[in-house]
Image (tube, rainbow, N blue to C red; front, side, top):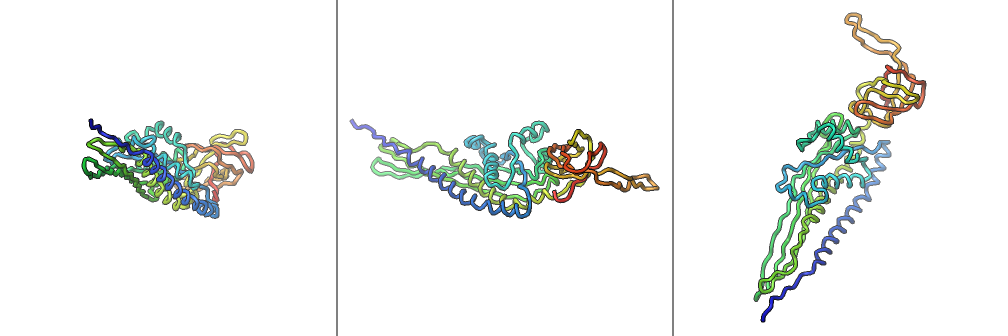
Length: 335
């Protein structure tokens, strides 16, 4: 009796292919990371702190097969997670915890439609106290399979190639102006060939699903391109910190050495900023309209801000005498 013989192709080769791909990717990323200290030195020379940014979940409505996003860790959120990891590892950025972002989005009912535009992103960024917000789109997230063929005397051999292609677009939004500072894109491609052997019509081996691994690697590759671009732009974003608030604040509360002001991140006040507390000594008015033309002031104290939310700032007295409620707070140059 002639029996069908099934010869399984070892899955070890498939696993080794992924290990080699991952190792090559990690080595390349490691070489890229080796250049990051040069950028850090440049920021240090310019006395600029690392820019503080927030990464919002990527929008993916234009993807042909959104269900494929479920194949990578954390689904659609996973794309943003990979970018956060890349930015943190670069050492160029301070990245806000994703939990904080989700909390603000829920509290303010932002993003319920699934889309965040630059104006909304800037508003979220001001609440979070960041310099810039990163919004992005997944524009390609595809798996394609191509099969081979061939055989002789009932013994057939074929090779199936699986390609994963990922394309990402990113925009960096200035939280103060809602202006798009710049945009960049990244692409990734990973592939794998599975061999199949067929003897007298019986197929052996081969067809294990590794689409998720391929898509994850392709996403990491695309994010690497974006991260490289953002590292090159780190100094530009860091310089946003030099932009002083355009409005003065007023002292709202004084308790011991703690001072609370009536302006916060919505008006570009931020932690670490120093402000001059000044007492109004005279108000010059228009003799015809009675409108206040100018306030004459004298400095009484300097306060360093330690805690800033959207609408208020708290700071500690570092020099001078205790201010009073109603005193004016003016941001000092050199912040």
